[in-house]
Length: 325
Ligand code: GDP
Ligand code: CA
Image (cartoon, rainbow, N blue to C red; front, side, top):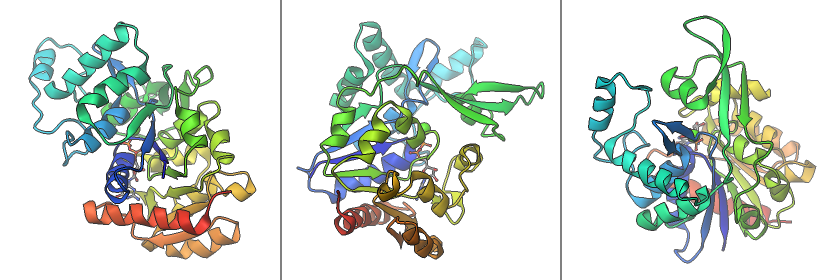
């Protein structure tokens, strides 16, 4: 069975670790990774979501933070700080810097990001094929009230989230998306899949970005395989992150039902054949079923590997139940 998953960072990566354990090792998983979080820092190309997937599945993640390398040290960052060289707010650890140096070097040699990612993954052996959603640069920006001047301005997503810690947002846009084309293998991975999964990643700045790449949403709408989604919203709030600040920008209620309706049922022009909500949100199941979206309520907190594996199993069971087209 060939499974294709659209993934952001932590939520997607944790789900993928369960899916990889639960599936037969011979069942290939392709991950279409969000690159809208990517940024240039100190002349280095940083790809936070791709790295979170690569480190998590490759056994190199800091398990407590959920991002960055394990056993990390911060000496380079201290040196940069001593020079007053910014941005000081972005956590570039020494081990992690090695990845960004290697990536930037390969990009400068002329390799596209998809090829660079393949080379970096050769070290980590994540057990999945990790494809950037596009090889072209796309950078998510968020409109905020500047805390210093009070004036509205657009900031890079990393500045919004890491430096400013997710203030009220007035807009979100994906710079470069109009000219971005799907990366090598991306559309094919959706067309040829036996199962497509939308994991509990941020619906706006992770899944939303990937779906905005030309051809991706259409490929999912018309895919042969069942498409099953997992809610990142539990009991009316994101489990972590800033989805509650960003969903209102696309007129989506911060509820499991709201996100399910936002993705929509494929029987009515949407993206999903099945939707999983947390057991605490079981109250919305009947309503979603009535609008043509088969929905089940199961525990959706990825508190430990066993709980995460159960979520992956629930996705496979849902896929069996709803079938493809
Ligand atoms: P990011 O790029 O690191 O922000 O990661 P993703 O976009 O892949 O995932 C972020 C989303 O994961 C957030 O909206 C969270 O609500 C969701 N999330 C994190 N942990 C859990 C969990 O244990 N269960 C569920 N259902 N969602 C989670
Ligand atoms: Ca992200």
